[in-house]
Length: 118
Image (tube, rainbow, N blue to C red; front, side, top):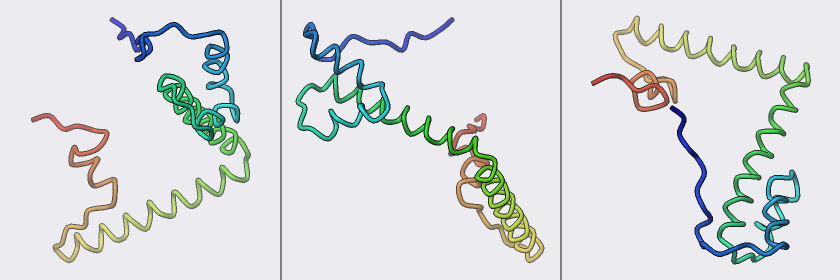
């Protein structure tokens, strides 16, 4: 079964042709910023524009990651951080202490993305 993630506009009113055009622009990179910059009172338009901004940021992130040099730098830094965390964790374990790794410790204890069964 699939969940329906659509909902009618909160205002319940019919959109004018100009509002419909702005709603479409809300999902076009850069144009999605206009309703957020201007003092637009239409809550539906604001909601669509915010989603458009998140999509735009995701698209920019994906484009940056497609550049091989950037990907290599991110991979190198990420693996370096993981190795540093592993060394610190092992050192603390050897000394009989527990060190919760930032973010990773919360996920491992079920407070993040990965929920443990109760």
